[in-house]
Image (tube, rainbow, N blue to C red; front, top):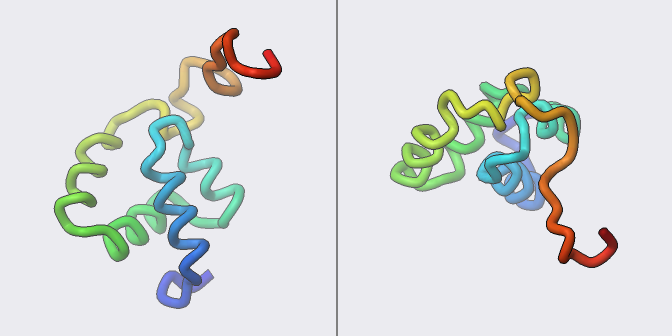
Length: 85
């Protein structure tokens, strides 16, 4: 997919997923086909410079953004108080 011709819904969802700490780059690639470097380019292009810098500082070296570096296998924390547990 060409990064210059992305529709707004795709841009918004990629930004949202990349901003979330527990969503891996692998999950973004599986859903949209964007590798980590492409996600970084999207973040750089569609975020304010200060927001991009803050995000990069936060995710650099973060193990939860890389599936192979995670210390847990699957899922996310779910409180017993949540509906359906």
